[in-house]
Length: 437
Image (cartoon, rainbow, N blue to C red):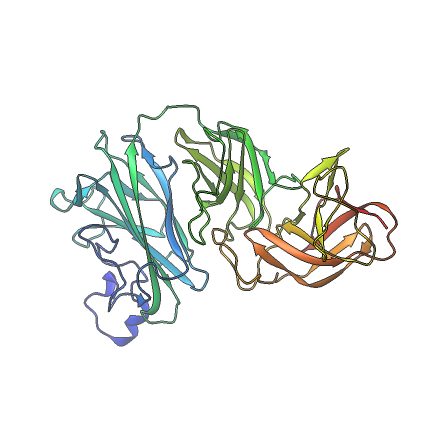
């Protein structure tokens, strides 16, 4: 039963079990428990479900004494409908009762409890019950929550952060829900160890056609300076079926949501925006061990279709596709893997990004299984000639969609635009495929 109803026993109130946040000490930290128990939220064992809980830190896993930072907690589970969390920051030297710093809410979706269960007063929790717990309120409906944490004014050594996330099915009971936990170690830093990352809105674009802007499940390249201290791919950071949202201490936040990171370098980062970034103007922030960039406003759309066109020539991007006999097809002399052009009448596998939701939805930090189909109709044409597409297209890897397309038999030899249309959005007209009879 949620803390607001701890003294009530009326049966209907179980519908609100912990919808406004649990009692204190449900973070999984030393001396705490979690909500995976009778009377709280019960379902699978802790961390046994397909989801996760994570915190995006603006300064990487560091803190500057006394310098406030904004955290974002995200609970992910595609099979669940309602999400909540509770987190705490403890001194590594006293993880049971040593409060580290202070939390503050920035909106009505979060609240702070003292160790005795009371809402934190303006003057702070009393000295004898100093441990604080930041958590969701009933006003929070999304799976992401942002708030602020001010570290201790002096260097107190490492700080341990514990978080528990609840992914609930919304069936009106406390049964069948899932609990996820995570913990982090923040190390003290003096700050100013190097220049902060910088970039502009024009430097945020899809990674294949380089059209500015972002969209959910669209591979995106960000160009700038001081974006990372080294060059690294995600190969060693993939854990099981989980793709990383932190690479070499670099994180990217899009509309306060952590993006999946495939590649970092001093001048470029490749990311996959999550499903729930919304549309319109969104804020993009890059954080490295040297600090966070200024927020950059970027335009987000629901769709941003782009075909896999890894090479260009004479200011044209060329699609590389796969024939049914596994031959690599495209423009010879541009992509070294290509052995011939596309033949009229044959079926090609063409790949792209930015084609939106699938059924079922797949979180962008998760390896795809089962090739779920695209839910919004897609039209593909060669120039003005509409092609036949088998099915609706499928998501075959994170951010990578596959379409089986029949090359129109009427096409002549030469370059033809390959254009996709979905949800009223058209892909770049500067992408071509070469036809060769």
